[in-house]
Image (cartoon, rainbow, N blue to C red):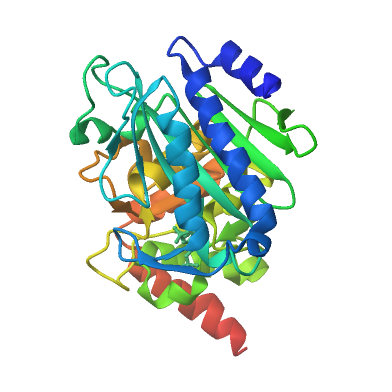
Length: 348
Ligand code: AFP
C-alpha cells in the first residue's frame, strides 16, 4: 500500500509511465528498511567474504539488498533491464526485456562502512528511458547522460526511513510508516536553500585534494577571520545519501573531489548510480551538482562503473567552487591566503 506515493507519481510523473517503476523500487526499499532494522538479529552484519566488481569487500547487507532490489526489478513489467553497483554487467529482465520501457540503475546499499556501527545508510536509484522499447536492452543503452533521467532518488534508513523521489521539475520526500507500510508524503516541492554555512568533506584526504578545493575548505575553516568573514560548520557521515538528505533539509555543500590519492581513479563516487541520481534530485530542488568544472548531468558516460569527482548542494557555494576551479591563479591565492590569515593569525 503506497497510495500517497502512487498519487504523487500519477500527478507529476508525466507520460512516461513512471508510477509502476518507482513503486517497484519503493517496494524494494521498504524490504531493505525492514532488513536494516533487524540487522544483527537476522545475521545481516559483517562481511559477506566476497568482493564486487570494483574490488570492494561486500558486506552481507550489500549482497542481500542487491538481491531484494534485483527481484523487485525482475517483477516489474515496465523495467526492461537494470544495473547495480554490486553487479559487473547490466542485467536484461528475464520476463520484460522486450516489453519494458525503463532501465533502472541502483546502489542498493550506500554507506556500507556504517552498517555494523548502526549509522545511517541508504539506497540510490536512477530511471532512464529504454532507447528502443520492443527489443532487449544492450549494454550501451545504459550509458546515457544524467540529463536523460526520467526519475531518480534515494531512500535513507536513519531514525526514520525517508524516500526522496524526483521527476522533471519536482522533488518530494515520503516517510515510511512502519505500522502500515505506507509512504506518507511529508515534504513536497523541496527547495534547497541557496546559501549555507555547512560543508561536508573527508578532511583526512586534504593533502591529496586539488588546489581549488584546498582553497575553498581553507577559507571555510578560517571562519570570521578569513576571506569569507563568517564561521562554517562541518559534517561527515560517510554515507552520501545521508549527506544529501541533510542538504535537502537545511542546505549545505558536499565534496568528494578529484584527488591524487589513487591517481588512476577520476573520483571516488560512481557516475551512473550515485552521482547522476543525486545530481538529478538536486537540480529539481534548485541546487547544483558538478565535477568541479562541469555539470554532472552533462557528463557523457563511458562505463557502467565509471567514477567522477562530485560536488553538490546549495547553489551559491557550488558556484563559488566552480569559480575557484576556473581561476588559474588558485594556487597562488591559496598560498597568499594561507600566509595572510592562517599562518600570520595563528602566530600573531
Ligand atoms: P560504499 O559505496 O562502499 O557504501 O561507500 C560509500 C561512499 O561511496 C559514499 O557514500 C561516501 O560519501 C563515501 O563512500 C565515504 O567514503 P570515506 O569516508 O571512506 O571517504
